[in-house]
Length: 268
Image 1 (cartoon, rainbow, N blue to C red):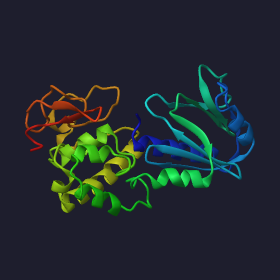
Image 2: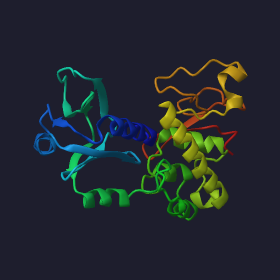
Image 3: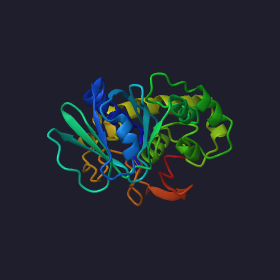
């Protein structure tokens, strides 16, 4: 499932390509056909992200809410766009580009009030300028749940996924199973600030890099990471490999249905 930085990159891209212009909207697959007919030819006024949710706002017609889930993906084209291939839920065509959406968990036309109901259920998003971390900090520092579970709870923090969860805990030497209330206010604030910085970097780079400069391959002489996700990381998807800092074998366990990676020595 894409993490929050990916949705913010998409919002930025769609804002630049479509906002302020009338767009053609269709549903080649047919599952979004009635809604697409209402939107076709109207102006897309804004694209924005909140956590793992993307919102396309249309002048006078509501908001398209998109949640990619595990299998959803956008494909971007320059015009002239090719004929749709496969199960395209929604196609947007603007002055210079076209976008196809396939396989999302949600693609629905909502009112502003319905959008607010969604965002009200979410915790603060480290990538939003209007984010207030205080509710997340209070929930974390008063909870008996493992900090690793809290970081992935979208009602606590919006947009943090498995990669950022594993990496930010490693960067702060925190045992992932430590109860939130045992993390303490100071370290919880440090986690928030680090997520703000790391995820903003992810928006700019289009990949997740969490390794500090002094631990980069060109400094340490190790081979660069080879992984389809790209980016240099400390523990994510490195189970069985030596920790980049201490050499201890990186561990993995399942927590609430998701794989959790950590170094047993560094994260004491």
